Length: 94
Image 1 (cartoon, one colour):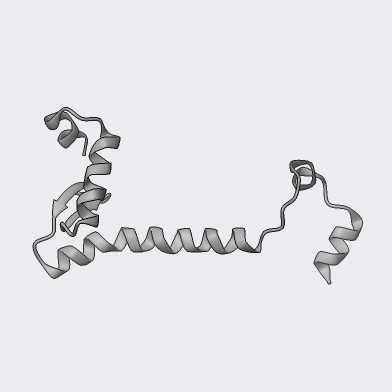
Image 2: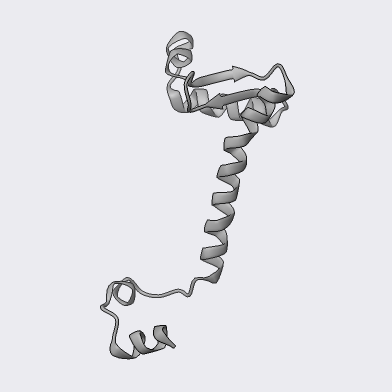
């Protein structure tokens, strides 16, 4: 990605945004964090599956985060950082 950014004279954030937009439009551009790392054009079903894997993983993690926040109760920073009371400890054990 750094090489692509350098070649086209754009910053990395802009290159990522362009790749994102191209993906949304249906262009099969994948990205790999494993060696060989970088962007690639998926030319087979296997390569397309490789391109989808990290996005699917990110989606699962975002869904887990959403679920946690939906279960959360709004509390103040002070409450969150406070030492647990004896009653809190008893409730947790029950």
